[in-house]
Length: 204
View 1 (cartoon, rainbow, N blue to C red):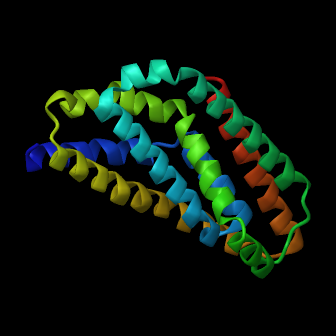
View 2: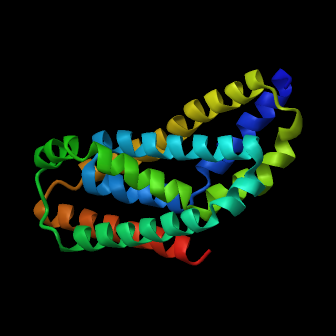
């Protein structure tokens, strides 16, 4: 892969990352509910899921998708159910001071990472990118190990950078609403965002 080819991949991938989808909506809801610190493990789960899909694409996505179709469907509906549970919890929970939320988030890092990993693996938008769009940008049949590592490295950099834009913007808005009433509204917006992400995944 030439430098120009890698640059094209990075550009296309960045546009795909920044286009709002279930993963981005879920991240927004998660950040609203827990703050930017808990968004870090959430983004780690997103990166891991994208790298898994990229590895599947390089290794022959069609065969892998057919072999593990039932597993991907199960992951999809588990992520939908969990998002709806989080949405219900956000809508019904009492607003907590920002310090309390951050303290609680330290113990939920693995939960956040596994949640976003499941959403990414079951996200139709992610599947379509690696199944249909990626092969038109990168010639997977002639991709060498060094090229694959370069693309994987780009994914590991571009995705967190793009998600950071959403996280800091949402967290800033969250900071502006510190009252009990404001935090309750934030929780309900977060719940609505998570429910919307679940319904979007379910409809595709």
